Image (cartoon, rainbow, N blue to C red):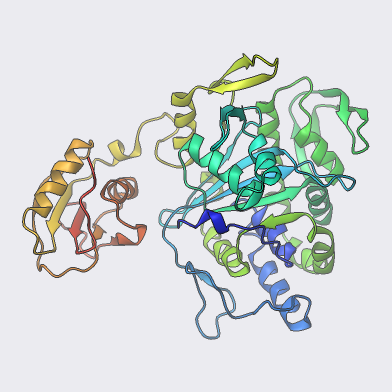
Length: 449
């Protein structure tokens, strides 16, 4: 699902209700809000609220809408990862802004594996095209120096470069949008584990105030939810990230409570009015709704949460006196791999657990192709049990056929062989000798060593 990042602009969709419910809390709240979004989409299109937005078309290659189908279907097979950017934008300021919050929200359409990874703003990393800096300055630099695609594009580049994961989309929101969203869903219920006392919580007028929250069960409105999510006095950025993830789950609980969706539907105009100026994204409307339909199938209890915390970083003071966090990249990769579903909670590789048997077959007239591919896979740690010729030699497209569910191994094969995710298909022979059969077609090109 690669995109030309030079053309990733600040597509500010007027249907910000969709963004507010389905994108800002993608993977977490998107499933619960699907039908509300579709309802609002129809109201907006019929009433002319959204001029130029078609109710039945999509310009995305990852979305399909059949005749008469109200909700579009997500047909992409590659993992979707959204970079969520929270900026401290104030009415009296014009920017550019640094990011106060950075999260990766990820969903694999093939396995329905989903995860949320929080990235600390003080992470000291190389910014592509610039020197070492806090990762939260990437957005600032991108807007300041007119980077193609602006601040979000450079922030995406920086996260991709330092975490080694491709990012599909971004969603950037300011904190007033967060406050309004929480208020419109009626607040959130939060259990506070320990006393929070911040004697200098920053206010919008550049002053400070005392923030004190006792342990126990609380019902927070938007303002208090924001304060709970943002404060870091007496705690760390890592605990702050965990509180932000707690807010996401609380929002999910609120939206999915019995009878909540009809109440939200009556507030459609309020969502549109209050969030229009709060969220920017490069997703299309149909992409958001189609992903919502896909996310309906995700098991919430299996969503993986991770924070790049003190186990993944080391404190460091720069020559200029700035206190930053230097990444311990081996540990950071472990957390990333857990959230993205390539290892289990104990850190054991899922590919090893699957212990899949693999057959590689040559579906072309190029002699020795299966053998060379098998040698390449073996050299990269993936054993092949058998190689030979396929049933015919005119396959145009390569296939990775799963006779039994071995998704981690299949994904690894696709990556190693440079094949598209669409090459993965389910086999019809459950009694086949091999768990996975790779058929090399005319589209296959031998990878470089």
